[in-house]
Length: 298
Image (cartoon, rainbow, N blue to C red):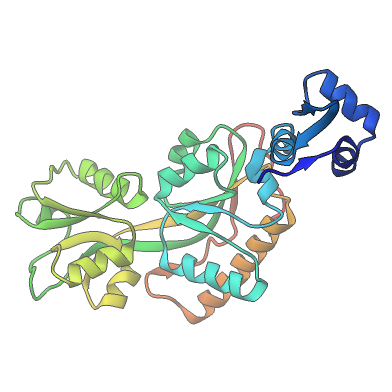
């Protein structure tokens, strides 16, 4: 049954005096029904009216969410996801993350659907998806290359040794940085693939497991995925894995706290060493788009 409020009750509910309530009704602004000479206010419509007239911060609804959680979208990386898990465990801060690929993550960030985006594409590609000032924060560099099982697929030394063979190539989603990397390397070497595509796969580990299970013969992925699944690895490229931070959120305590935690944890990882990763550039910050000024590095 719908709940109805009297004039006095709705005034108390909205923290207004009754004269203001009558003025809103007379102006046709507040939903109400006149029954037997008295005004009744359907509570669910009053709530809807308040929602429709709520003014959010200039950063929109995603900015309003920042006090409760930190939303990330973008590229897949085993080490970064492990770091996010540790952050949530130690701080009890919620960090929902969608692994959608570098370019899709940047589009989500620009569209107000994330606070931060992870990516491993060149700065010009980042700029192509953004329309407001942001910062590109380097987290680490990592090694990408060909993953395969030598017992089934032999004599692989690089992309040139793959393109002319009828192999099943494990693909990533088209909006991922790894998909773009494969196409860029093929173009630089003047190669046209004649392989059979398998997938797409949404993460390096998923791709590696597909090769391990015999669902594909070879694919591009991070060295750590090969190490974890016992696959062979041919290194092809070292790339920067970065975090994109909108200038509007850079000074927020939740963002600053996450960056502090992330960089501190990466320094600890560097001390132990992780196969296929390098941490010399961790914390370097580059302003993107005109008007951005670089704050102090967390």
